[in-house]
View 1 (tube, rainbow, N blue to C red):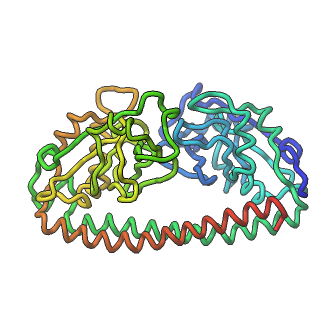
View 2 (view 1 turned 180 degrees about the horizontal axis):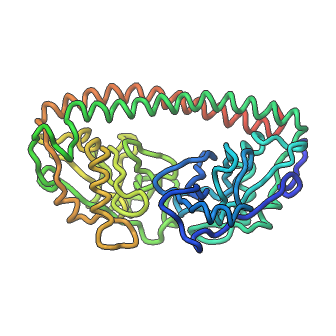
View 3 (view 1 turned 180 degrees about the vertical axis):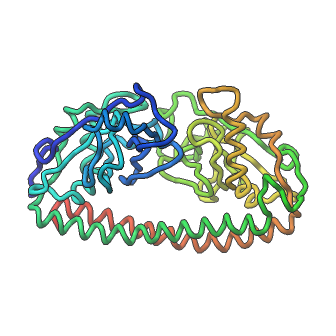
Amino acid sequence: MIKEVELQDISDYKNGYAFYKDGYSDKGKLVIDLFNISENGELQFSEKDKYIDEDLWNKKSDFILSKGDLIMAMTDMSSQLKILGRTAIIDESNKYILNQRIFRLKIYEDIVDLKYLHRITNTNVFLKPLHRFAKGSNQKYLNTKEILKAKIPLPPLPQQKKIAAILDAADAYRQKSKALIGKYEELSQSLFLDMFGDPVLNEKGWEVLKLENVTSKIGSGATPRGGKEAYKAEGISLIRSLNVHDNKFKYKNLAFINEEQAYKLKNVIVEEEDVLFNITGASVCRSTIVPIDVLPARVNQHVSILRPIKSVLSSSFLNHFLISENVKRKLLGVGSGGGAVMEAITKDQLQSFNVTIPPIDLQNQFATRIQAIEAQKAQAQASLAQADDLFNSLLQKSFRSGL
């Protein structure tokens, strides 16, 4: 049996600083924030990155991070984006500084291997017990004391290194599968632009019509009375915004309702080839085509059904139109208008949104070629699922017996 130790026994810790009090800059030194920790436990960067100037950097030098520091999220970013307890490794010294709600661990290298600790702190072996202490409803959080008392299994150092190396190799296999899937997605986007051009600039001069004139349905549903407590273990699918991603349907946490609940949502029955479009919240403007295997289904109030008129508009074209970069940017501009706190797109805004309409024969050619790409992508996704199973199996075995 592998012994367990608390985080405070294997590392020094430090909380971040609330840099918003002093004000952020447009550029300068990067402040590591919650958005910089991915759900996979990696550093990530985006347009949401925050910066401080050189003067503030020097004044708060105690919070500058070093290569090999392990940072941990002390709170979730939202009810949907759950990173509480997730960690990432700092890859370079004197490049980042530590923001509030982030916890830094500087490990005792003679006791614990950094890669091993990083692996385990991003697994349910560590996270599930930790989350039991979390406070809050939608946005969970932990305090320093609770994090420091979190326990991890700790085999001898040479064994930790061996476990980390095996898991690194298994993870490399996973990452190759993910990269291949990404290539297929890039190919789909490239094919769309090659065949139709930029849909916003419309250099090819395609006809432009309002979305309401090329669809037979635009509509969203509702959440059954009682919310999550009303969901069933099986039954008719209730598609929510967390299931809808760009050109991808995520089955995790797919909700189900019974026949009686579904009848009350009979105005939002999902049909084959419907395009699902998120209309509110952090995931606004995400779009995908409904998979056949989730039917019969309904949608809740955060998801709109877009049903193309097949004689003028194909589902595949509409979906790729909506997720194309410039259309997405334009839609987000529409959705954030009016100074609303929550980003949202109304039914009226959707109905009046302009869609370029190439000849239907050309759209159907595109759909056929996309179908072939999707078949290849499905094979890569199956390989990824196998790689995930292998990785998780090795992970559980390593923490039970040390491999």
